[in-house]
Each structure stands twice: as structure tokens, then as C-alpha cells.
Image (cartoon, rainbow, N blue to C red; front, side):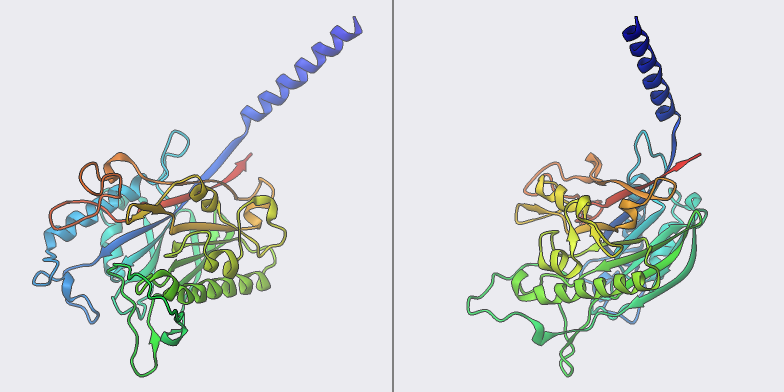
Length: 368
């Protein structure tokens, strides 16, 4: 008889726990990154935009620019949306944008204008005239500070090799100043503010390309990783409980030295011990064969979002990392020809999107 009563009590307790678990409510924010691939306007600006003018090699017209904005807006409005998350990203890091003006045009697109995105952007010294930027929802995020951190790298940092490396074909060629030997590339963008009253730090990156070959150019990306680590260490020194998100097109995989050694990114959450430690959910995704871009019939994840230890080991009353994904819906994918399965790019004959798929993570917090 006592056993039956004990069983009945346990059933009641488990039912109560289940009811409590079901009653829990969470607030979700999507943090995303998207390489917009050559988002240029048609105005002749004082940068290297000649090919992206109506009389340039790309035959870039106002009509094409408008379609490009529409396509980008369509994707951005949907990144990370599903049955649990109906909202477009609260934060969107971007790269390959010509200037602030193209981002202002983008957030005014009909699919995005009601989202009320703010824009953070700096012109960088990149020789192609492309920059990084951050879009954020003003209703959720209060901006307190932002700065661009220059990356100083020099041509003589390249690796020397007796065996000539196969040249990688890329429109993101590395250009140097012949007198100083400095390689001019994108700055790293640091943005700080309050997400629903909670301080968040975001770093947006677009690291040097593999122009000239992966191994030869790897010191440039390793220097970018070291700079990223320096920024994060500075943030933690100011605030030991700093919450940091670093994101971008790194032109390297999660396994490369720039990410694994220079940043020190961890594969497993259990490896995070101190506030400056960084978790990279895209390393496991890469191991499982997922890809955000393709090159020579091989996929990889160069687009990554990493979060600091405080997003993992804090309690659920503050924002925590939940899960990550790559947004690659069928309408964004090439369905025929040599590049079937690749991202559907915008070209002279195809109204596409980008050569990269966007990536995202969810931040989640329990609400009472």
C-alpha cells in the first residue's frame, strides 16, 4: 500500500515538474551574418568602384542595383525564422558593402522598413572599396559606442614556399601600398550597447582573402585573428563578465590557425573556463559536412559566429547562446548546371543573391 502511495506521489511530482517546464516562456533574438557580395550603388565614388558603374565591366545599372537590394532584403527578412522564431534578426553583421548609403537604401526596402534597423558603418581602407557594417533593431538594442579597429598587415608577412601554390581565383585580390608594403584590408568593427538592458559587445569581421593561395596568405588572417583576440581581451579586462559575439567572413575555416590558435575558439562548450574563452558552434557543423560557401566543388564554413563564455555559463535570467544554423532555403540555391547546389549568385544573366549563405545563432532568455 505504501509503495502504491509513493508511486502516486512521484507521478504527481513529475506531472507538476512537467507543467512548470511547459509554463516557462523564453525571449529569443537572432544574431546573423551575411556576406552581401558586392553591394555597390551606381554612383561614382572616390574608391575603386569603376567596374560597378553603368559604363563599367559589370554593366551595373540602377535597375540591377534595385533588384540586388530586393533580393538581399528578402533573405534578411527571413534569416532564422521558423515556428519558434517569427522575427527577422535583431543583429545582422554584413560585409562587401560599398558605403553607408547602400545600407541605408537596404533598410528602407519594403520588406525591412518596418523592422526599423539602425546602421553602424565606417569606410575602411580596403583597396576594393568594400566595408563591414552592422544592422540592429533600434527597438531592442540601445547603441552606446562603436569604433573601427584597423588591421595592420604587410606584404613581407606572406609565407615563402619553395613549392609554388596554386593560385586561388577570387575577385577579392590583396592589394599593397608599394612604398610601405602595407596590405590594406577591412577594419574590424566593434559595437557595444544594451540588448533589452543587457550589455552586449559585437565584433564584425571580413578577414583578408586567400588571393595568392591559402598557405601564402594565411599570415594575414592569422594577424586578423590575433587582433580579434586582442579586442576581446581588452573587453574582458574592462568587464570580467563581458558578453562578446564575434562574427564575419573569415576566409578561413574553423579548423585554421587563425581561428583555433589566434582566437582560441573551442569546439565544446565544456572547454570554456574563463570569461575570455570563445565557443564556435560552426566547428561541429563543418565536421558534419555543412557549408556556407563552395569553391572548386568543396564546401566549407568561412562565415562564422562565435560567443564568449558568459553566453554559455550564465543563468537563464540573462541572454544565453541556444543554437546555430546556416540559412540556405531552396530559393537561394542554384538548381541546375555546373554549380548546382551552390549559393545562387547575382550575375549578368541571373537575378540571384550572394555566393555565401548567411549564418545565425539564437540568444535566448527565460522571461517570468
